[in-house]
Length: 196
View 1: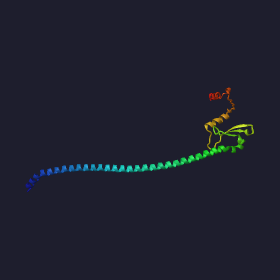
View 2: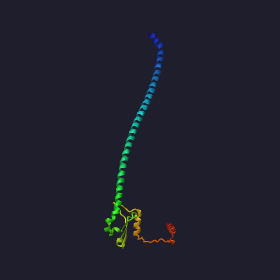
View 3: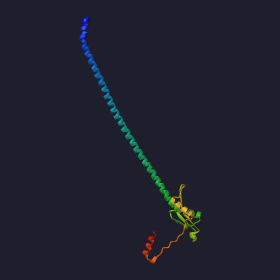
């Protein structure tokens, strides 16, 4: 029986070998297909994940833009309110300052020792020139008076220049007489134009 078994095994060996080769080939093909399937699954997952992330990103971006837009609108409204309040306050302060400038002679007449009629309002470059004693017909002193309100009010450059000229005694009184050449009005106007 051993010979018969050996004959059967030897006759089946090429078939078994052939089956083994087919199995190995199929196993290799199956392994390649598994790899390919896994790779395709990874790609699909990455695409899905990317799409999901993009969708989340777009939602977050849209929400952030909406919040930023709302914050900007709120800031604009708040700032506009502040600007309007500041403008109203400044306007009130300016108006109050203008009124105060006109009323200053009432409060300063005793301090300076001048009558209300001695004050002359200029507004610029100084607020007043006070001709002390003018109302009596005898000017004893000329005072350049600048009115300031608030703790931080300082003289501007023009006002400082006037103050310096007065302090340096660079003050004059000049009389300029227009000449009347031949009483001719057009000649007078020509003369005035020449002076300008």
